[in-house]
Image (cartoon, rainbow, N blue to C red):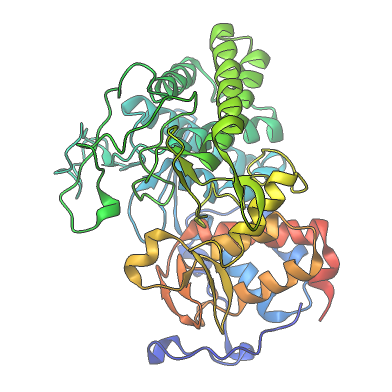
Length: 469
C-alpha cells in the first residue's frame, strides 16, 4: 500500500502531522491499559509484519487494540464475568457500540480465556440492560445514576443514559451473542436471564411493527437540533404497517425521517434467524425460536415489497427509509447498519444485483451524503451536518473495504483512512473532505475497531494490498 501525498492542513499546532519516523506509538503505556490479551497482541505483531507501509502498520497497531486499551472495565463476582465498555469520549455504554467495539476480537476468543471472559461478561451486562429498558440505546455503569438527558420527555429510568429506540441496539446484542457462541461454543452466558431478555427483545420488535397502534414508546427532547427530537408528539411521522419494524432513531442517534429503516430491518432479519438457531441448539424456548423466524420472514418479505425502489441512474436498489405509504428517503448514512454494510452485516452477497446497484448509488453524487474532496471521498451522515458539510465518516470508508473484492478500491480506501488521522494515528467520527486534521471526536473506539477489522480482513483476503510498498 502506498502512502498518501496529501498535505494535512493545520487545525492547531498540536495536530500538525510530523514525519512518520518521528511518530511514536499512540497506545497508552502498558501499565495504563485497561485490559491485556495475549491473542490480540500476537495478532497485531503478525499482521504488522506483513504490512509494507510503516504508517499503515503503526495506525493498525494503535487502532486494533484501542477498545481494550482504553474503554473496557472488567471485573468478576463469584467467578462470573462482568464487562462495561464506554464508547470513548462519552462515559456511557451503547448496546450497539459495545458490541461492534469487540467484534474483531471474537475470532480470537477461543484461544484466549481472558478475552472470552471479557466478551462473556459483555453479553451478561447487555442482558441486564435490555431487561431494564429494551427501548434504551445507552446505559451507565451505576444502576442508580441519573444523567444529562433526565429531562427527555419519555419514560426515563435510573441507569439509562439515553432512551432512543434504535432497532439495531437489540439486533447488535443478538449478533454479539451468536458470533461469540459460534467462535467458542460457550453457552454459559445464555441462562434464564438471557432467555428473558431475548423474549423481551422479540416482543418489543413485534410491538414496533405497529400493527395495532403506535405502541408505548415515544420520545421528545428540548433541543435546538431537529434530529435530536421526534415529530408527531414523539411517535414519529405516520407509517402504514407493512410487516417491517419501526426504528424511531437511526444508528447515528438521529431521528428517522420515515420509521422503516431498510438496513436496520435487514440486520434484524439476519439476527432473528440467528436467535432461532441458538435457541434450537440450547433446546430452550421453542415457541420463541418459531416466533423469531416467522418475524424474520415477515420483515424480509416486507423489505422486498416496500423497501426496493427503481432509481433513474442506478436501477433497482434499497431505499434507506420508507413509510409504507410509498414515500422513500434515498440516502446512505455511514453509520452501521448502512446500505453499503448490508452484506458485511450478514444479509446477502456483495454480488447481489440489488445490493450492487444500492452500493453504486451510495458511493455516488446521487447520495446527498457522499462527499468528494482533495483529501478523501466517502459517505458522511446527517448527524455531522451540524458540524459543517463535507464531513466524511471513516467508518463508511472501512465499510467499503469490508464489502469490496477489488484490490484497487481497497488500497485506495486504506490510503484515505491512514492519511486522514490528523496526525493522531487514530480514526475519528468524521473528518473534512479537504482536511484530515479537521475532525470530530478524537477518541471514538468503534471507528478504531472497524478500521482494525478492515485491516485484518484485507490481510486475510487480499494480502497483496498490504504487502506492496
